[in-house]
Image 1 (cartoon, rainbow, N blue to C red):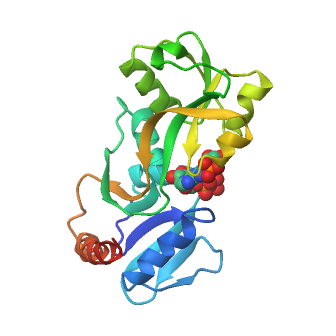
Image 2 (cartoon, rainbow, N blue to C red):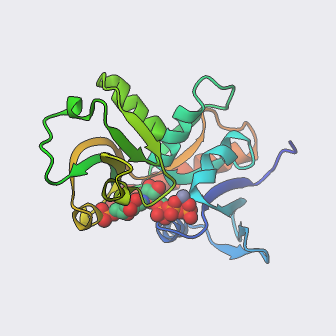
Image 3 (tube, rainbow, N blue to C red):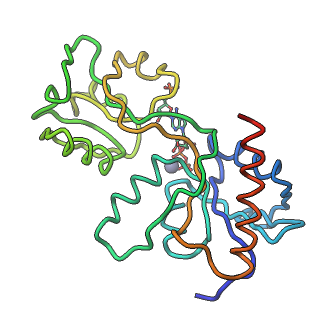
Length: 224
Ligand code: PRT
Ligand code: ZN
């Protein structure tokens, strides 16, 4: 692949992480103008461009070298890492937690169910969009359960009778309550992170990344 001299960061095109990610980068002194096809935001001062994509595609784009870094939920990053374990993929690193997009990946069961611990899930079906993270948790707790992988609307699976429990992202807990579900286990505490390969490119992009990390640390420290 042709090497770039500008740092390219993938971020969510339109969703929960878009505004706070742009806000953070602006605070780091970066400003952008949109490309005509709306695929990029080009840096106006510094050599940093943003690639606007679906959040699920971000880890793969970093692993393929299409971009140098990405701003993505730890949930998406860690699920990708598990799905590529054992494959010859570029290992990805969490460079910085960014302090927004906070949520947790949790198991929830119907409210009326007595839940007494992981063993309660033995032999049951659990619906999720995170089969890797759920599978790892089940293995750690020596629980054998069926994993029903769904792309979305996981919370309605128990009502539809397609699963006995769910494993999904929770923020306020409102969605669980609305679906008569109760949170019983937290598998992962998540937030948006700056993700990238384990090593920096040894060129202008590496220099720019070092500068960006310094600015990020300053901005995040001030905010905390
Ligand atoms: O189109 P694209 O694929 O890019 O977007 P998306 O729809 O997959 O993602 P989006 O924008 O919904 O979320 C992006 C990231 O935000 C997630 O990967 C998480 O890292 C983070 N995040 C933070 C959340 C939430 N909070 C959240 N509450 N992602 C999803 N939710 C959903 C959750 O799935 C559930 O349906 O909100 C519901 C629960 O919210 P509460 O407040 O009712 O508990
Ligand atoms: Zn997505």
